Length: 282
Image (cartoon, rainbow, N blue to C red; front, side, top):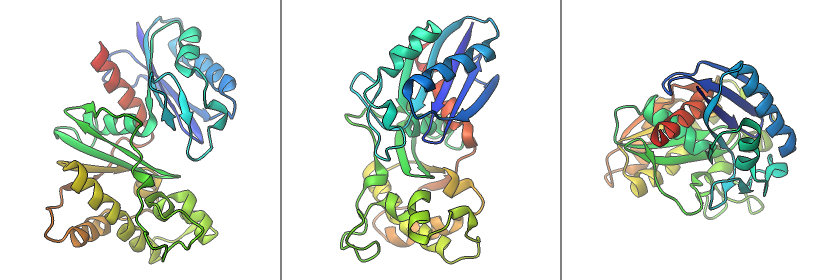
């Protein structure tokens, strides 16, 4: 029997299978449909192709947005990219298509679990994961288990530019609006990937991000912070050495800076997180 893994992002959806919950046997990627019904159908169709007649023991996956209390679907998508998926019984619909129990989690949280168990955070007890891409997300993982939460983790929405001196009065002064790819494109008028690595902007973004990491360090006291997402591991990127330097500076003598590492699992971090979640269930 096989396990089905999925990761529904604002732009791309990935579907994979695993035989042993240690490795991804095969996977496929496609553009995320705007309508939930279309997305569920594609997840089911692609999973069945990968399964090639094998039976499904269980399904697990992540989706962007704020999950409901039962973790059966999303009640809000802050960026609006999955507005057509909001208030839909996603887990129930996938269960009907694949005839197996479905475990749903926030996509950034699952990516963090993947990195904590199988990636850069492996071997560390307390791992904080931050993804900086189109938006900013993250989670705290302890002993390979996602911390309990009431409404999800939203580190990207922490207020940093309190007096609006950087972003102006009309923009919410959050970490996400300071360093995310979507925010940079809106602010600079060009896609981040088209901004040369030599541009001073990348060091400035490292400085902004360091203030967000300072809060994570003081609130969560991690052994290691793992950073993922296209703005961190892409090309060009916010350089890790600059992030570490600025984090040391903004922490001062308040606290020691923990190990800060780049993520290692790339686009499959959420799939590995789904495996980590299923390992807890079986």
